Length: 527
Image (cartoon, rainbow, N blue to C red; front, side, top):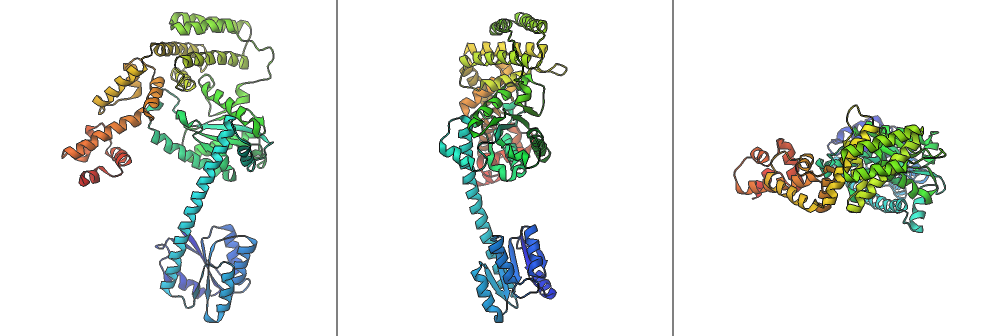
């Protein structure tokens, strides 16, 4: 709805204007003021899209109000003058200050409607133009920020971002993630998660206000990890007299309260200046891949998770290398023995805290390296994270001995699957399963168990092959069969939905509209 402000010092004229047309039906909410000064105060405190104002009024005339808005406050609000024949000279002067139109008294209903509809059309056109311009500017700024994060930027990239921030200020890359945290991420459709990400981005922009241009979505887009990236700089917190930690906690709380989504925020290393932002981005990548072995939280700071002030750091390389060799072989008894040896050595030397973390980091990075040598085309860091999360059970301490043992068992089995190089065969079997049994309750987890392949890896293979999630591929197959049934049979819509595997008819209709651009009923009618 647009807001119109009616300004006149004669109450009966204001009342007459209010009842002359159905304002709500024309898309307007109405407010009134009795002189220019009162109108100015209202305009400065509330959003107004159209002003219909008398010229001659006490305190401040309509002409003075228009002049103030255009010259002092730089407002381009649509402005319509109410004038009599004797005041036509004033109306001409008003036009020189950007008055949109004028209406002669007494006001005719048709003339007023013409003005309202013309204003609404102009406003819609201008809003569309501004939205297009903002979209282009956002896309341009996103490219600049992504270039800085990758460390492959030009001087132009640097200068464009420096227009929004102090290039020498302290900075951190902040990653905000939407993820299930278990092995079933690929059973969620891309569209569903993408819709949630848009909701999260909208809330982030509302909180950040003028800093929203430093927010980028889908930073790791090619791997389909749903995330938002923020280029944080110190002034954000300083202007609110807050610390970085307090400001980002407020930001995350706002996102969760206004979206209801389980977002996780990872804050990279604090660095000095735009030139070092890629280093902060790299530390967030480390935090993300090793989350499974950290205490479960919704907000992680790199400095807290990886204390760098310790001296005499000890890496139990001999015990860890023996554990890695056991994981490669995949022998559970040997893995358990090597895990016990590692923890016994750590206890003997009195190692705790950040040094323990560094030892575990060494182990996990070596495992990622082993998997990458066998298949470098999928996101091995993400698969490690999913395996770590999926092997954590209730009552088991995150990152403890039991958790590490279970993760090592699962990772050994995963490496064995990679060595067999069965990915193409498994994909063909899964595709055949979908073709033949699309109406059944198929899930990525059930299929991975049936064909003895890690579900996270199967999900990644599916994306690499088909460019979409398992669930999206299954939905696509079901809708294709539904369309065929609508063309070739007289089945009712609910019967078709049930026949292709949908128990919820409304959900089926929505998926059909997404794929075919119309409802099943209309599709059948068109055929």
